[in-house]
Image 1 (spheres, protein in one colour):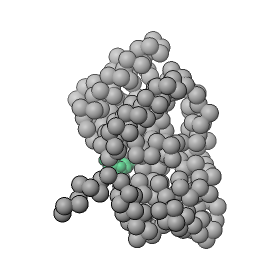
Image 2: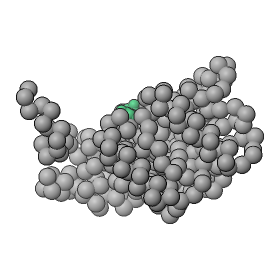
Image 3: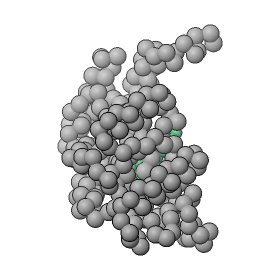
Image 4: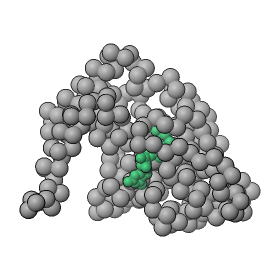
Length: 250
Ligand SMILES: Nc1nc2c(ncn2[C@@H]2O[C@H](COP(=O)(O)OP(=O)(O)OP(=O)(O)O)[C@@H](O)[C@H]2O)c(=O)[nH]1
Ligand SMILES: [Mg+2]
């Protein structure tokens, strides 16, 4: 498996070499990163979206120095694709670090309702304001737009307000969201969620393991590493895990 990880890391570096250093951390990401850095101090809550399968590798470097705060909530999204007991361990880990964290599946409306209740309880603790802004921040393809849409659909707003605003585009391909979009998710106080473009950590292309995990979970396009290498990596992980036992009798 180590060999595959190195191979994928090398494939990413080869692409970076061929296309130039701006390929990984594109000028668009750099611009988005500056725009987000300016807005972070202004918004009421930052929802840091990570992939529940790889909570460390899907860290958004922009928030690295953002310690425990009443304004910061880590969302482990795609929890339906992750091992449930591992996700619980991760949530416990964040709790120990005094960081608020929540596991979520953005396609599950029951789950989104729970998240909305959790958010509203946090907002009540924060400030008495008429308008509250909640910003989704994270690397590419972790599900920020899917979360924004679901929060808007499930949110406590009038039927007329739903769909009045344009929805965010959700795509299986990374890098879909290009600008910041605002969707209303609650009334009295009015709460708006800001969907933002995904940002990769500027230096992570040097780390073979992070590159492999990002490739396997969809933060990087399969074509960057090669579909065959990604499939081989997936099979090698499945082979070394208990999951394999489920198919032993097939
Ligand atoms: N299984 C599962 N899939 C999800 C979940 N959330 C999002 N997805 C899928 O993940 C893919 C990426 O979702 P997006 O919402 O476009 O991701 P994003 O973070 O906005 O991506 P960028 O705009 O590229 O930064 C889509 O295929 C979604 O349907 C989830 O909780 N569970
Ligand atoms: Mg998006």
